[in-house]
Amino acid sequence: MHKFMRTIGFGGCDSDLEMDKIMRKLAKTASKTAVLERNDHPTLYDLRAELAPGMGIAMIGQMTEKGTFKREYAFPYVTGSDISSTAEAPSSAMRSGKHMPVF
Picture (cartoon, rainbow, N blue to C red):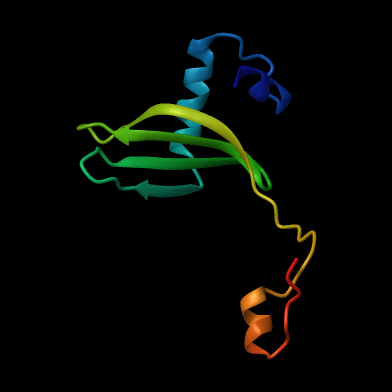
């Protein structure tokens, strides 16, 4: 994670303490939040801090009794909107009466 953070502009962040401080700030300014509910397990929260269009840091953790977010782990994410190809789904081809070849 430290190498990733350096490549996106956090080069001055060399210690775990500095990294933790940055991650706490990112958690407070997260642009997306999701609740991940699991049976018989504590509820997890997915906070996403976008650092550039389509990329950022995802933080997974729990809320403490005081209502603060406690990060368990984090990872970089990238979302894409490019479509590389299109194809007709086999089920729609069968409904249209076309036959799909079998290999």
